[in-house]
Image 1 (cartoon, helix red, strand yellow):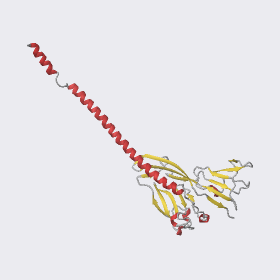
Image 2 (cartoon, rainbow, N blue to C red):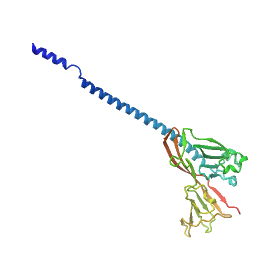
Image 3 (cartoon, rainbow, N blue to C red):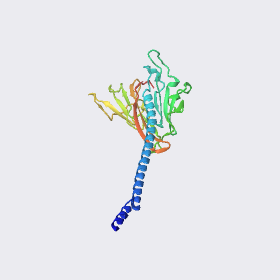
Image 4 (tube, rainbow, N blue to C red):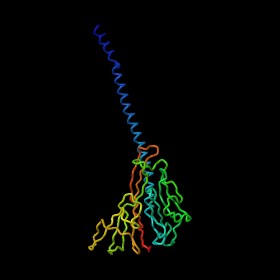
Length: 284
């Protein structure tokens, strides 16, 4: 009889869990819940950063796409060289934060156009932390339209959520242009060879054919065998020289999100103008 009672008592004690086991189970559950919460928060932060990066990339890429495709057309005249005799088709301001250009957008074989219209004088410039595009410049503002970035009608080109700013050096503009890599070929050099010079200064704004001296240029001269060598003596273009200028515009742009300055992007693009500038130097 005593043996039966002891067995029943032991069975009752083994039913359920102890307090220690319950506490361990709760602790493990809380640990798993914390890990799951941390993973969820981390995933949300990563998704937010991905969306911010995509917004910055989309804004900057769309602006650069517009700038590259339009600047590349600078100087197109439908074969009418006289159109740009008195109006430079490509100009970079000394501040390096503005480029002006023009091209004949209406010319065709069926409808020849010999006039550079007001809405064919374009440009891009930095205004504060925004990029603006010039859509036209009035005839009344000629000839300043070709070189004055204050002339013409300008409109914002980039979303206000993106700021164009040099986050590495606040004294520098976030948008910079240069003529580095441009080339001028002389067809009437004194040696009767096709000498040429290239813009080597990375912060240059002038194009090489009209250079007054060899500063920032590398002059290449052909020898009797027709081989070119750099480091030649620069000779300023003079009366009746014939020159061909292959122009390159370099864009250096830095941008960040307005509401998250840690989200940044830096991009450098080189644009080759498809229409070379041809010069025949008149008498002084």
